[in-house]
Length: 243
Ligand SMILES: C[S@@+](CC[C@H](N)C(=O)[O-])C[C@H]1O[C@@H](n2cnc3c(N)ncnc32)[C@H](O)[C@@H]1O
Image 1 (cartoon, rainbow, N blue to C red):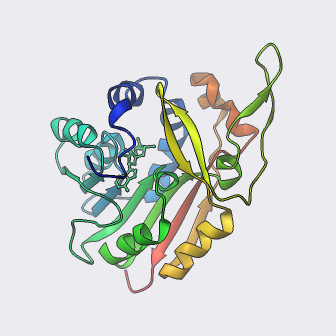
Image 2 (image 1 turned 180 degrees about the vertical axis):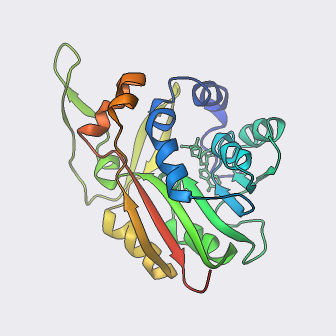
Image 3 (image 1 turned 90 degrees about the vertical axis):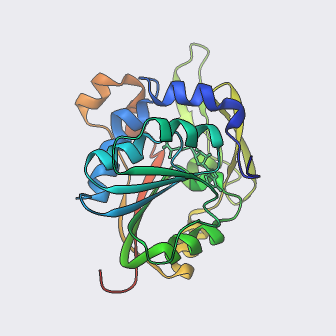
């Protein structure tokens, strides 16, 4: 087990959830926004940082990309390897020390994983190192305003009244219930996050706040939260240089 691994104890429950309708934010909203953000991927070399059990890596590989998924949870890597669809392969490792040569990828993706890392800078340096000049780093993460509090205030009947935001400038660990266990979220402010990318040398070329369509709300009723509170952001970062 790699020291950053928080998922081993909940790995089976996570795999079960990831492949079910309960994965509503991703299935119902975020996947479509992420696929739009990455654009055409056929023939591209992509690294998926914190690939989990591999569902987004598989989606990219099915679109004819060559994908390397990295995760620090052995059970996830075993599952992803057993469910390869073609151009995808998986390695146990940490995003903070990638087992990859420099300038070997056109695109890096992080799909809700940076909130899991205690220190951002080593991960960003590694992403920058393995990208080719002009390569992009598409990052979906929980909004910093959300990681500060991360729960709804509800009435006695369970209706969501308002989203809780407090202690925003307290950059400390928040415990997050997940799949019957708890994972640590490393809350950072928006300026800490953005300035860490800029300091690494990335240039921000796009920013999206995913919202569901009426059809998506019909198909996945839970996702209408996103019409009230921007739970997620998708950043499109670019490494300097000619692409
Ligand atoms: C919230 S899950 C997201 C998984 C996947 N990207 C998805 O969207 O389904 C976060 C993932 O990041 C991985 N992770 C967290 N810290 C890591 C690190 N330092 N190095 C590699 N993987 C890490 C976890 O093991 C977990 O699989």
